[in-house]
Length: 103
Image 1: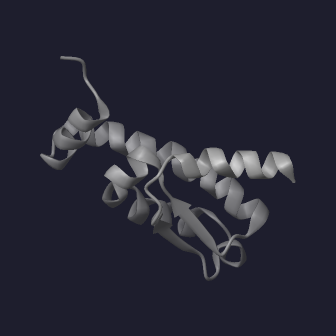
Image 2: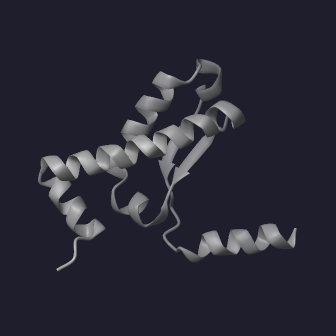
C-alpha cells in the first residue's frame, strides 16, 4: 500500500513522531505564507479549506494563530480570525478562478 495523507493523519493522531513532524512542517510552511499575506494585506479573516485543511484543522488552526500572532506586528493581525471553511466542495475554487477571469 502506498503512503497517503490519510495514513499520515492517522499516525499523527496516534502520536507517531514522524507523522507529527510531517504535520508540523506542513504547518510551518503554511504559516510562513500566511505571515507574508497578513503583513501585506492585513486581512480580517483567513479561511483554511481544501482536502487537508478539512481533514486536519486541529493540526493547523491553533498553530497558525500562534505563529502569526507571534511573528507579525500587532497592527497586522489585530482582530484576525482563522477559521475552517464551511465549504466542502473543491469546485468552489475552480468557480472562483472562472469568475475572476470573467471580471
